[in-house]
Amino acid sequence: MGAIITTFGELDDRALSQLNNCAVKADYAVLCADHHVGYSQPIGGVVAYRDYISPSGVGFDIGCGNKAVMTDVMARDINVAELMDEITKQIGFGLGRPNPKPIEHPVLDKISVAEFAPQRKFIKLAQEQLGTVGSGNHYVDLFEDKEKRLWIGVHFGSRGFGHKTATGFMALSQGKAFDDRVKEKGMDSPPILFKANSEIGQEYICAMRLAGEYAYVGRNTVVEKVLEILGAKSVYEVHNHHNFAWREKHFGEEYWVIRKGCTPAFPGQESFIGSNMGDMSYIIEGYDSGVSRKALYSTVHGAGRILSRTKAAGRRRWVKGKRKHLSKGVIDFNKVRIEMKQRGIELRGGGADEAPEVYKKLTDVLSYHKDTLNILHSLKPIGVAMAGEDVFDPFID
Image: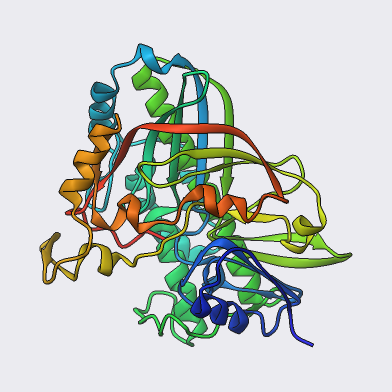
């Protein structure tokens, strides 16, 4: 009979086609309102398999997620410009910029003796990148809420450790060795599926969970560093992730639920939904409804792209770690910088491919999910830190 598919928002035909391809062996699938084309499975896509696990569905940035913290500081009591300078000085952004101060954490011990042995060789990379943010749409932001309290928000994932884990299983799916270099097939490739109870399926689940744990430690570490710079304490936290596979029960059956770029939103579960660098972000809470159940208790993870990186920033080539521009994009990033300053937002880094115009409006996106969630807090950006566009990083989602 095929999968039962539930969609939200204005549909992108190619993303819907990708979801249909992924759902051939699934019972249910969902396309959230922030959806756009991804590798094999669309970003914002959810697929529920009875017997399969999907590395291509989880994607390359395993366990990517968002964390938000309300501090015990009022926004008016800080110098935002100075604080953003310290954040970019003390936290690494992008490839080739490891954590300025190496971190020790038990998760590194787990990686050194990982149950899936090939992951052990990534220990040096994991050590260097723990507590770094990466680039692309990954960030460290400061916000103020309606009561003018200061918040910290971060978004990033498992960095090179997760990326290399994902590409290794892609190689295995093609009959190659884990260490072999493989080329990604086309964006609309069929999903990579492993029987969940097979040896390789169990190995992937184990490796994915370790990469997810590493991503959580990374976000916690970065938030702790910002709190240290501030001299502040956390009084309330929300931490959630996407790009993962969960074992869940829906409609009376057990499934492996693959959420790429979308967030679990079970009744009472809180999530931090980040926007673009200039607009409001939100803390939301899922609730039970007929629509929520059809959505497999899933919601958006952000606003969702409407412009590709190439269209926004132009065609570029990497030459010795620097971007060489081959053609001009549609976004004037100097103008974006001026607009951010006029809106009272201290911007550090970023590029044309992350400008506000590249994204849908998060308020519009969330409106399509209004029967599945409540908004608990509205967060206005006052400081945004991202890698600059001259920083190369292949580990973004």
